[in-house]
Length: 378
Image (cartoon, rainbow, N blue to C red; front, top):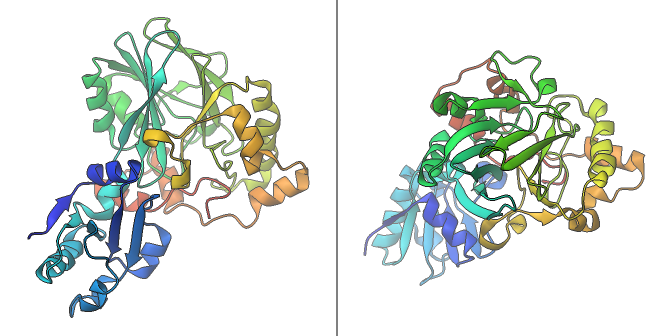
């Protein structure tokens, strides 16, 4: 019997396959309540590390015997210590999470959304530990990456495996919950970085203006990425229609909620923009479009294989944020009683403007925790 390591990738596959696993989280209670590993078949308890220093006998009474057990902590050291004690007590099938919750926060799982009508493919990168979603369009050995995350090596490696060169990186808006990797990836690959100009008034770097009428092609003239101005989460928020099939909504519209307008301190100013986008601009689009958001708030939004997607017509029927008829009620919903704001969101905005250059370790700390970009993420 020995304690075994489980990677974030292996845990992701278990969660997506809905395999049963029991998790003992030994972080402090506050961190656990703020953010934890979740899944349909995940059974999880929290016993802080300091309560286990004198032994694990009390914990063993709460842990089912014979079930796969994973011990998790912030960085991995505490989970190894506790896991080894559990193994010494005679339990089998015991693992610790390699790299701790930091590795869980950073792992990206590529999922194929589908083939495009004009040729090529669309992939979704699921950051399951934080709820962030990125996309890659590939056609004729060219690629475009949308809402690139900080872990740019993942996108570079995936494009290489697909035999594609990254030509464009695009951000739907200036993010406040995670550090964008769009500009960094563009610099590394020689790609063009695109950003909505209304979100870029304070940025310190050059970029291409992402505006309606400036369509972007991938693979010669094969795949068309059509920008749609859709303010509300930010003043510059821009959605994309890809190949007349998919609607990438950024942080404006999610599967089970809608975007919050308060992360730049402009909630009262942007509520009307948000309603206009959701209740007018989007209603002019084809209801057959498949919505692909930049985030998910709950594991219930993960579909087959981890895909986060839904038809626009289904969202107009089922999403509570799209069914608030009274304008005053809508205003109250999106500006009052909101969930807590993302961790270090002001520092993240400054970093994404180019005004701050935190170390890699500091960036990890800034991003720890859930994204909380949606109105209903409580």
